[in-house]
Image (cartoon, rainbow over all chains, first blue to last red; front, side, top):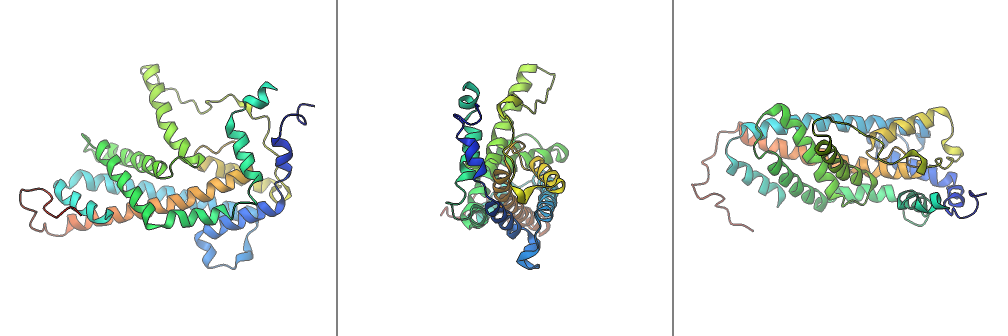
Length: 92
Length: 205
């Protein structure tokens, strides 16, 4: 049928082996903050995914808080020359 | 025939890259290293400042300003990613689409999540055994909602995007925190004698 004929994608999807997935999951786990505490072999995929979601959510929340903070700072700080100096020193 | 060939480059590239995963040496590890370099943070910082400056050109209200700051930060992050990842492209193009819709609708704002008809994606490739089970599938779905532009990706591509997005977010948070700390420290400390009327007296290096 058409699924077998011109779709080169289909056969490639079966080439995604378990090992590759396990590899990706473990690398994702390595990015999480808990990875440093635990031994490397803790991750069931479900747990790693859950930790990832939680971590991304917490990063989003941090971002929201920082955005508010920055907005206030930028609004209240009057002297733009001070700001420019700070920013320049950070960027160099 | 038509559907398979016209299913844009997106699905074929995502599953093609998935099949090529073995050849590339550990993308998620590279993701963290890529985003951790000081160079990336400086590039991002510069973009962030540009975006902030252009967005706050007349806006001083802190309430509306927070969202503007966040959007500026996200756009800057997506730009720093140079559109190499799906989530960064989703952020960049998401802005344009919304603007265009607003202009067209002329007041009626419609949020169309599905820009593409669902028919192009026949079905996601079946995840291998390691990812079966309801729990895993549910969490994959949640993850797909969190990472921009990744709702219909196959599992391996989603994992890759998530790793890159996560590393990028970490860098973003770090950069913004540094900026906020520096600005608030300056605001709290007694104003050091401001540079004499000649703005920016320090020699430009």
